[in-house]
Image 1 (cartoon, helix red, strand yellow):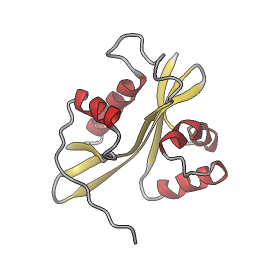
Image 2 (cartoon, helix red, strand yellow; image 1 turned 90 degrees about the horizontal axis):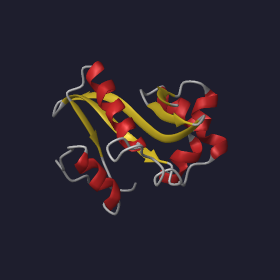
Image 3 (cartoon, rainbow, N blue to C red; image 1 turned 60 degrees about the vertical axis):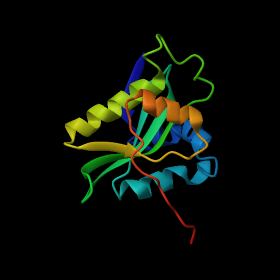
Length: 147
């Protein structure tokens, strides 16, 4: 059975580590719950799709307001377990990633968001294909500077 829910307990947060560390390999398991709890104080939420009693897709996100776009659900992290990607679908339109993405869209709508957005590293071509298939648009360049 497949379910999608917010990770609110330490048990569920830690259960997301194996998947999210595939996207964020610099994370340390021993500090993961503490880091997520800290970010939760700033509005971060962690959602996961569970299949066969384990997290197989994870999304970290937050809702905020800005002058440019109004109320936004911003996706910080979105990843499907690499071992489940080949086995991920009952049909081509029902992948774990797509199910979690649709859940995020509904969550955004239910919280009166006007936009859903994310940044994606330039080398993540498969992710870009997925986002375009979800009818997302490339609307800007993201610039950063390490300090």
